[in-house]
Amino acid sequence: MELKNLMEGQVLHVLDRILKDRNDVCKCDKCRLDIAAIALNNLKPKYVVTEKGRVYAKLAALNYQNEANIIVEITKAIKIVGENPRHD
Image (cartoon, rainbow, N blue to C red; front, side):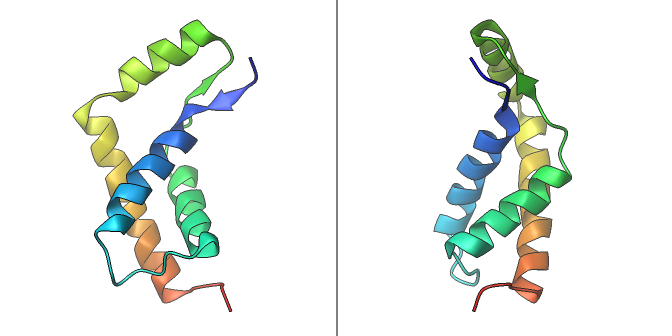
């Protein structure tokens, strides 16, 4: 197994759910990744290196507060990227 930040997958999953329902946000790859990067920089990482660690971390991440924190940071990041898009 390799070193993995599980928060990346969680943020991308939640981001895709949020973007699906928003028509006021650019959904190009550059904007999507910029939003994810900003959100991840403001969230505590969850690194694992073993399968057992991955399972424990995923279980711990399945709580409402964790999801709420992710949504808050993605919402902030959407605002930042929306006001300062870097795509052509």
